[in-house]
Image 1 (tube, rainbow, N blue to C red):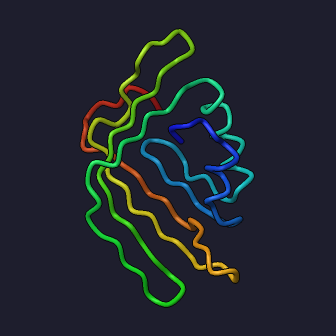
Image 2 (image 1 turned 90 degrees about the horizontal axis):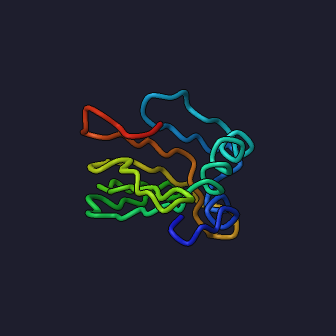
Length: 118
């Protein structure tokens, strides 16, 4: 995300991936994720910092990570928009036939009562 490589970021997702973020409906499938997220990548520079990796678990062909993060967006005029100052995410992965891992579910939320963007 941080280098603006939308196609690289999208390649991390399974074709049937589900993205669940606060305050909006889930995005189901790679094309729905693409339709919603591509304009974000075009409009903003994304600064995502993983502050703490709390869990990493792999079992057979499934895995998960649980992390705390900070997310800031920078618009085209250079203005910084604090997105999630204290975000949390649980991401589930599935092993592909080639041995790589792809995101099947990504669920993020924030401990903040107010969010700067949706």
